[in-house]
Amino acid sequence: MGLTLIEMPYKNKAYKPQKGCYYHIYGKGLNDAQIYSDHDDYALFLYLLKKYLTPDYMEERSVNGRRMKLPVNSVAYEVNLFCYCLMPTHFHLLVENLENAGISNLMKRVVTLYSSFFNSKYGRQGTLLQGGYRAVLLSNENQFVYVSRYIHLNPIKANLSKKAINYRYSSYVNYLEKKCLPWLILNPRLLEATDYADIETYLVDIEDNPKEGIL
Image (tube, rainbow, N blue to C red; front, side, top):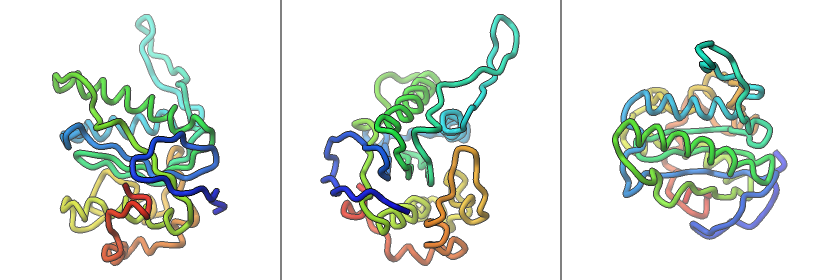
């Protein structure tokens, strides 16, 4: 996989993501409040990932009463997304940062637009995420594989589902069925390292451990 080896940061240490490195990105609601309350909320967040990570994506808009497809300010060549899971109070992304500002550019677009939508929909003001998002550097292949399993098993650990396949808002089914998307890359190392048909067997090894790039 060719991971760039850089020392793991301490928990919540502030630093700038670096080009060519792999990160676990996560963000949680202010005071552990929900950031997704219904299916439409999850769907919009996923749409924003699709919008900004699909190469040459064209968005349909109304201009002077006419429906037109216009290009968006894509970051498809700045970030690769490998795994995701959206939970009621937080989200997890596993990415490769292709350019120094890649993660920053992606999250600025997604979080800003989603927060504006959420605040307008539910009549709230102010920040949506507790302390913004965090990006934890993964410095070796074991961490990379471990975090991918953690992300896909998160709904089971949180008692939202008994089986990973039954949770709608993660990339687990994409790996199980080997179904890639223009905005979601199925990483070959992740495909070979995990038995996705029996992913629940890895639960015994999953802990909220900062040393494994979780927090």
